[in-house]
Image (cartoon, protein in one colour):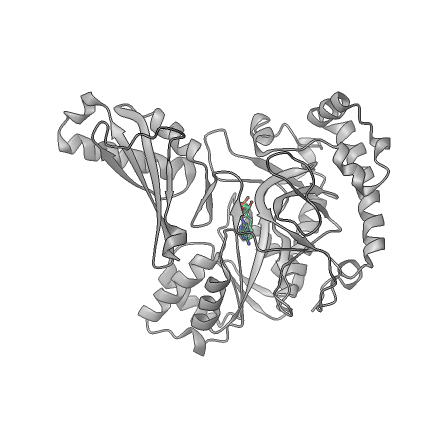
Length: 435
Ligand code: DLL
């Protein structure tokens, strides 16, 4: 079903006119209300009235995750605090998190776009949506929740964790739609199986999975094991949260971007120059309608390509190819975004450690595991085993507390981490080989 027939099927020419109008309004708004953007635009000699066509977007400055961090927490908001009705934030509570704010209208738009997304995936009013995305500062839980309600479905706000209980609720309530990360879907399947629950006997029809990269073979595995249609949903908190783009159940080839609200570009991640249509590069989004924290040309670091060919489902919006990688070193561990630099700063603040470490990411069953190997200094090395174990637990506790991710810490002897002659190899990600 197409939830918003008018806007999702606009002839591309009309869509582009709408985008231009919204872009012009956006640039005027940020010029007026966000000192950061006014300064950047002034430096480039760009005034709002210079935006005369969609390609003039290239006159605008990029925005990076670091810009949000530099203005932590609310420095890039474009409206006064009283007009912000909701805050979300990406993981990391060390002052380096990215914080976003929504006006009442933003929340309403977001709910509509998530309703569009659920409908594109094949959900409809009357469906039971078992929502296992995390509720809280993470956008997944509440984003999907509001969308499901907007669609007229019944939400079961389970959030993350308590897997055996989730399996029981899935069976008892008879959910027809499951929303969670792809890895969690498989984890849930395993737990259910151990409890003697057969997914194929449940009324579940659709899985809507995202927040982390996954592959076509993982889709096949989920579909076969759970007996459902598995749909890819994409989004990021800086732009809105889930619902920026979604596959349609009809074709399942590329994710329809909600282009009346987000202007997408593909650039060369090295030079920042636009890539030719159809070429792979870094996805960049400009929020066309957002009020709380509108962003110009936000660099997602996600790699993809765009396809503007008409889709058999009837939507006219461009489709982005499934995101398979990033152009930076951000790791996604069980859906939680983690930068090695965040782990590093926790390690550096801990006494008794040398600044040499490695992050080893593996996958056991369907879940990601991260081990932090770090060298102790000479003084700590001569300590009793008991003290070293205490140090390991302390590091694990700090990583959990500050980054929201569970990691196993393993202390190694001085010089125990291999030195590299060039760039230090800090991340050993074995998930791809294991897939
Ligand atoms: O992960 C929002 C979301 C929630 C999307 C629920 C889908 C479902 P962040 O925590 O800000 O927001 O993380 C955003 O996650 O830049 C991508 O690198 C990655 N990501 C999100 N969806 C996908 C996907 C949410 N379908 C970052 N495929 C993004 C691959 C994804 N990567």
